[in-house]
Amino acid sequence: MFRGAYTALITPLRHDRLDEPALVRLVEQQISAGIDGLVPCGTTGEASTLSMNEHLRVVELTVQTSAGRVPVLAGAAANDTRKAVELARACKQLGAAGTLQVTPYYNRPTQDGLIAHFSAIAEGSELPVVVYNVPGRTGVDLLPETVATLARHKRIVGIKEATGDMVRISRIRELLGSDDHFTLLSGDDFTLLPFLALGGHGVISVTSNVAPAWLSGLCHAAAAGRWDEARALHYKQLPLARALFGQPNPIPVKSAMALLGRCTAEMRLPLLSIDPQTREGQALSDALQTLGLLS
Image (cartoon, rainbow, N blue to C red; front, side):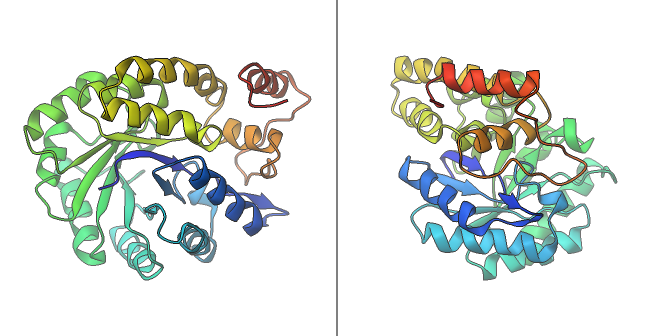
């Protein structure tokens, strides 16, 4: 479940409102390019600045447009367990295949608290849960031993591990042993190739907003044991990943998508889009041109 390349979708905005036609086009472009799944309303989707109604509308449109062609793993996180359960239940009603649940930020629970939090969401929503560890943003780290405990829950089916630490993924893989039902998804495009080589199953990618075929091709090649092909795609996508992480995500990727004509660069405060006339904007444009993505 939830294997291969999943795109952490941006949320297109226009005049401070959801740009629904742009979102529909984006979903269609992703599916046409061979993406394996879609993740609306995560960090890249600016979930923290969406209202509840906007959040659910993004999930609804993504599910409706994908129409069962790929799974939709909906971001449905909150640092209040009750709110996370409520949001996950709503996503289930909209047809999401599962929810992505980040470690609770700001209140920073213990490892036992994390187990209780994720278990309550899985039980309360009755949807498969992929947990998300990104301590650089949340201030709390989901340790490998805790992941192994969570993997024993029938509805906690995977992790998005975004530390980029290969010792970490090795330890998780070691603790899981031969049990391959628990999905290991990278949350770091830079280290995707070694992540897959160590037993990972795929990625939830920022870069695949811009180049979905590259990331899905990389994952498929690795899964089939075509490591020379996977390695070539890894080094092909690295310069793009560098261009898309020059500022905090999702600032560069949304600006890149605007340069490609797929949406506006509009963001919600406190994030600011990159002015294409600045040095940063020109560097992003140059990178896209060099990679053959922008004429």
